[in-house]
Every structure is written in C-alpha cells, then in structure tokens.
Image 1 (tube, one colour):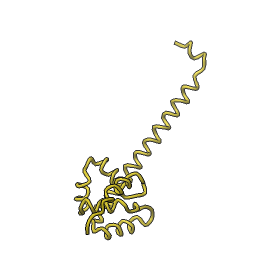
Image 2: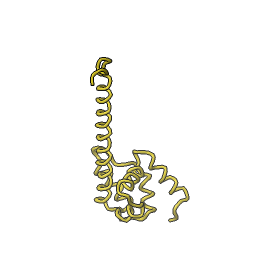
Image 3: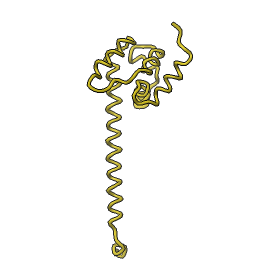
Image 4: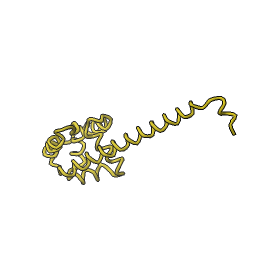
Length: 125
C-alpha cells in the first residue's frame, strides 16, 4: 500500500487539535526532546504508521484503556508504550496548568497588595 501525499500535511495539522493523537505525540516530542522517528521506534512502528495514528481521536475518560487498546491493535503498536506516552503527556500538561494557576494567583495577590497602599503610606520611610 502506498502512502498518500496528503498524510504528512494532515498529521502536522493534527498537532493543533488537542483532542487528536497528533497533538499528544507532538507534546511528547517537545517534552522529551526526541524525534518522531524515535517515538515511532519506541511504539514499535514506522514513522508512516505514527502519522496515521496522529489522525485518530485521543483516548480519554473512563474508557481510556479500551480506546488505547483499540488504537494499539489497529496500528499494531505496543499498547504499554502508547499508554506511557499518553499518560506522560497528561501528567506534564496537568502540572503545567497547575503551575500556571498558582502563578496567576500569586500575581493577583501581589496586585491586591499594591492596591492596598494609601497615599499616607508614601510618606513612611
């Protein structure tokens, strides 16, 4: 079976939609600083198969395990490795979001403290 000309462009586009596997794979590559070829090798597939998988919906929710197993079976990749990649991305994304929220809360507190200052406070040495 030949690889369609549009596959690479479609896989790249999938990185922009957080509900697609392509987005999760792209985040993993950024986090780990690896190439897509290395990720394909980790999953036990070819770079072409990785591109096809990128077009799939990302497993989520209560049926995460079943959805992941279906993807792994469809593309003959190592289920354990696929789950590790996806969970790693989820954890790092959650930690980054939590850290962003903490930073925003700290900035809001600093802004409130600055507003509490009165004109009389300016004369205090």
